[in-house]
Image (cartoon, rainbow over all chains, first blue to last red; front, side, top):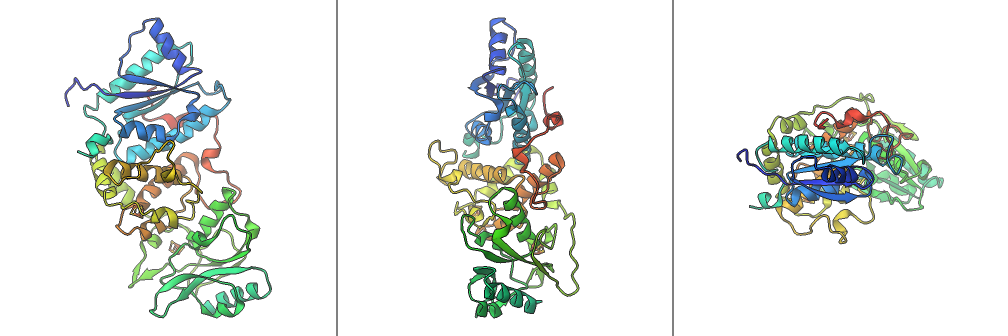
Length: 143
Length: 282
Ligand code: SF4
Ligand code: SF4
């Protein structure tokens, strides 16, 4: 795969912070790559392993999760639980062949449009840098 | 040792301490199978030794009322403790006859599950049967199987697992034999949404094995029954062992050891930001 590799990235963004941060990045016209399909979720603590697994099998090259900064969770501590779960999901997926660059959990508040653009840019570049599609795509596994 | 197993089981059944006792018996063809006895007189049929590999915690009806006596090796004992940690069984419901396990062999070769064993006596028991010449021990078994996978580049890992999972016939023996897979409705049976496709194909098989490994992370006690039960030799234990080491290094938690512990995904610490690195973007 050449450098024009155009990965598909699923964004699971918390309604109370990162989703609004993404909105702000858009309305203030901060440039960032457009590979991400944003899905609004109520809290990073809502992210079940199925969200990652299904994203990857259905064709994602990367999954980006955005939640509220530690101590700022709208539901007090959903992000703390999310952090533990994500760490385990990531090590499992890494073990079976999904490069760690394809998964991230980042904290972005509603007022951090610039930070949103920055972390999404870095994440997208990290996935692009792998120069190959994720091995877990259903179409790839079944071809 | 077998005399004290029979004596204890018979005594507990005879004086009404328990309603049933789960142990092993030998069949006419010489093979050993798990057995549940209810009469003190049947205790003389109990055996222990090579062949007694089954995890007897799989035979405990978690929702039941009966008081059960159990013959538990180290691996089975850890399953009991993890079930206690998860609030699935009260310590008072079971009477534990622990054995200091010598390690079990088949045709002179140590069972794979025993190669990977971490502790040979149950962490909790009411009475403990000694085995001649065997001391209780704890050890850190080799992780060569995990390291072999980790030495491969990512695309090769995926190809390796895809070819291993491809054989899976989705009989769910690995799930049903597992003492920790006790969900009344398994995610494989859920239709709305249907996360795991029922059809046997590379992607759905891969999905099933991912979710099985994730659901057991921080819970699996590495008794190896999944590997032993699979009719087509899918390497399941290596996934569980990998996750067990991750959980131990991240949270310092070893499942099935301390009955007072809290399950790892039901608690958190505020200062665990290191969990996101390396690999985190920032
Ligand atoms: S895994 Fe350990 S405790 Fe279990 S049967 Fe083997 S040696 Fe005994
Ligand atoms: S026991 Fe083996 S074949 Fe059956 S579901 Fe488990 S891995 Fe698949």
